[in-house]
Image (cartoon, rainbow, N blue to C red; front, side):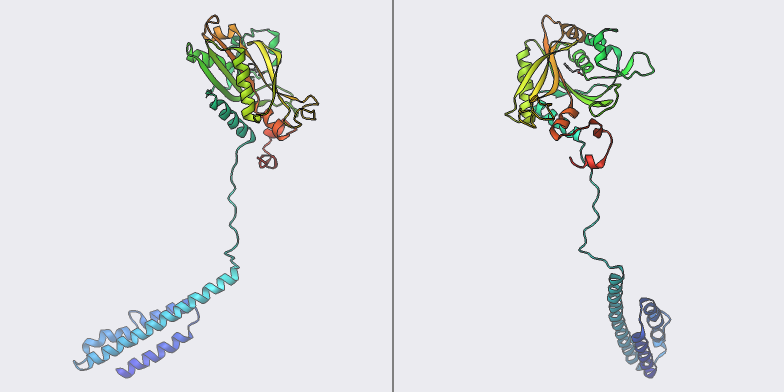
Length: 341
Ligand code: PHE
């Protein structure tokens, strides 16, 4: 019996040394340490041995088992190491290489400008009010003091839907009526941002869709002085504390008096350049005191209430700031343009 065990050990160790890969190692394990291996069978056969033989053979068989197992572990380890080395070599994995960059989105330049505008007005106590992009003729024109056939409608080329009287708003001003009707007779101080649409021949200066930010303040003692002060302060918050502003008389059917505000050209500092067409000034918004007819249409008694309104174009401001020559860039989704912001 002892002889037989010695034989088993010798054979097992010899063939273990010859093993060269994981697969033959597993086969070796089954053959020499598996349930039906000669060594394991010896354990089964122990009970047939005499009382004297049993502990001797048993102890010896155990020693062999431990020896085989530890040699097996050693070889298994060595194989794993060399396998790893081979794959590393073959696949040329360089763990110091940078990972693939996950593409990160970014905010659209208009959104960035819009957020600055919101912040500037929020600091002055204006709340953001959202209103619809699909409007009725009544809200877009009629209630803003532009009856059908009013020549002022020519300033706004309009997209009409197939439903008569329903159109895409050409400006954010119809929002004035919505806020007034919702909050009357409360005082109001809001800005109304959003998309507007005009039926335009698309060019470097004109697009069929663009944003506007409308502003509206209504109360019992609101004057043109408040309008000028607020908008001048806005310009300083937006373009820097030193920036100069000027108001020029203008005309809108829904404000009286009406004005346009220019800021000193922040490209050339007022000397005159290509961006300001040599004038030293950039026009950034239209404004005025809310027309009594519009106040009444909003539910306010024009004898008791007054208000001012303004409308500005975030794309235009973005273009002026970043020297963008063509408004079409805002909608062409060209990554070379968008990635610059
Ligand atoms: N709605 C005007 C436009 O689109 C701008 C404006 C708004 C002017 C409010 C005065 C008051 O040109």
